[in-house]
Image (cartoon, rainbow, N blue to C red):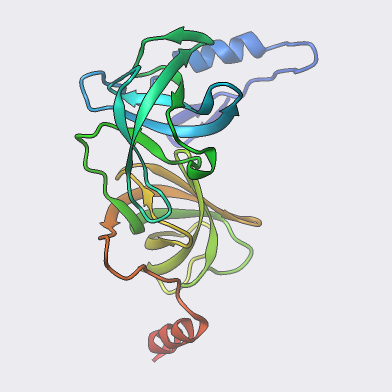
Amino acid sequence: MWLIGRIICPVFQVSNVTGEGINLFKMFLNLLPNTVQFDNDKELEISIDRTFKVAGVGTVVSGIVMNGTIKVNDTINLGPDYAGKFHLVQVKSLHSKRLKVEEISSGYSAGIALKKVKRDDIRRGMILCSKKMTIQCCYDFVASLVILHHPSTISIGYQGMLNVDNIRQSVQLIEMDKPLLRTGDKATVIFRFIMFPEALKEGSRIIFREGKTKAFGKIKKIIPYIHGEPVPVCLSKAKLAKIRREKTT
């Protein structure tokens, strides 16, 4: 075992050829406490992780029911789309563990067939939620960040790929509380999605990567995008040059 600070980190010797140590490793994983809390009493919320086009059925999405219960013929919200809006859709049928069911509660994986929805209109990271919920989408958000590795230095304007829950999108670093970041540094930063707004939750864990650059952190604050306002754009080279001049003077 490795001892890291006050945390004991076990190291398992396993073989994918003979299967040695696999059962012990699985047993250890089953003993770990759940980091996600499911609640049937909350409003419905499902994060979409895959989409399908099934012959004779239509568009099917899959994901884990995080909260609430979903039933056949329910009318629920789907979004955000590329403009950050949600649209009403109806549940055509439900499948869980390859069985057709009438309802699925929180904590279970669900296959959901949707009526009159094109597969091209759905992407991974969108959510299905109750009509009663008000979801705020954002381009910008504040996060704590720890740089695990970077070959040189990170400054404002740096771009990379961000993973949070089922969302995967390129972001730009537009603000940070330090002039430069290097391997091992910690900072509070503001990221901006490059393509379209996403539905995020405060407290969600993030992974930021680009080439050999690796970083992780947690979302601290969402900066909501208000429909009708100008869409935030990435910092241009001229704007970045101006920011760097201001920081050096």
